[in-house]
Amino acid sequence: MMKLHTIIERKSVRLLLPLFLLVLSGFFLSLGAQEQAAKPSTELLNTDCIKCHASVQAMVDSKGAKHKTAVTCTGCHQGHPPMVSKEKIIPLCSTCHAGKPHYEIGGCNTCHSDPHAPLEMKLAANLTAPCLSCHPQQGKETKEHPSLHAKLFCTTCHKAHRDVPECLKCHQPHSTDMVNKDCTLCHPAHMPLMVAYGAEMPNKNCAACHKSISDTLSSVDTKHAKLACVFCHKEKHKYVPACESCHGAPHPAGMIKQFPKCNMCHISAHSLGKEAKK
Image (tube, rainbow, N blue to C red; front, side, top):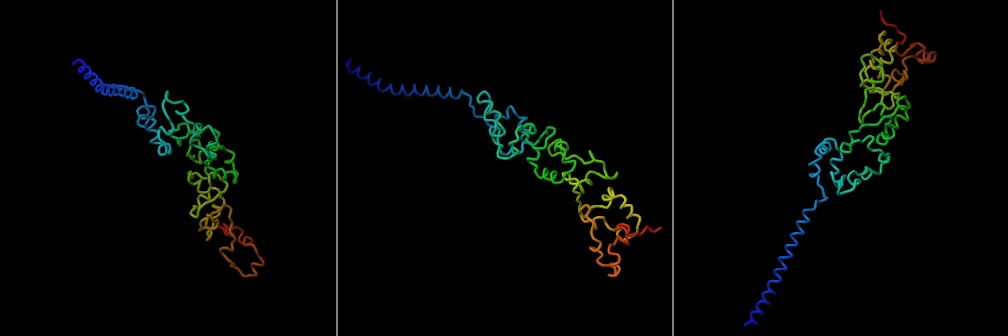
């Protein structure tokens, strides 16, 4: 009888031992999961960043340019201290911006002082080379058409990015009724001596510089006096047309032979040798 009881006990132990081991392993697995959950994750989401940096997010939303649309917070800032190194928190601009002359200049934050608003630039004084790396056409114009403007730094006039100053801040107007837009009708800012104008240029703008000619035209009663200046001086400064381009050959060949130049009789294209009627 004793022997039978012992056999039954041994069989019970054999049956219960696997169950005990299963429960024990589950317990340790649970402890491991709790310990893992207690460890802080180094992976951050944009929503995590905004909790502390709401003002930065607002800046990116309003003025972030491609930093808003092309990257996320963690696209630049790959973690948060002390989980990651300083280099990963604030990366070099060249990590993304490379391959163009502008990116090789260095000192990015001299102009781009806030990477969250990269086009909201505060320009340093006496800059030219960094500007021309993005605006080569303007550099070409000032070089090919020398003027006093070519001797200035870009930031002498453009004290902030996209700031276009009024000409009249430095230059005296040609007449008292001139406004800034009148200046640029003739003078391109980066080649101001290359005077050009459109077919709608009013006579008063020409008269601002050519007062004596304007006075002459006002004093005579001729067909020339009734024309716009640009009718003859077509959209190019200092262009003087040949009289024959409008008048052909109005006189007999003998007269032309005797007086081959029109101004031998008509004196001036603006007065035609006639005085104002009294």
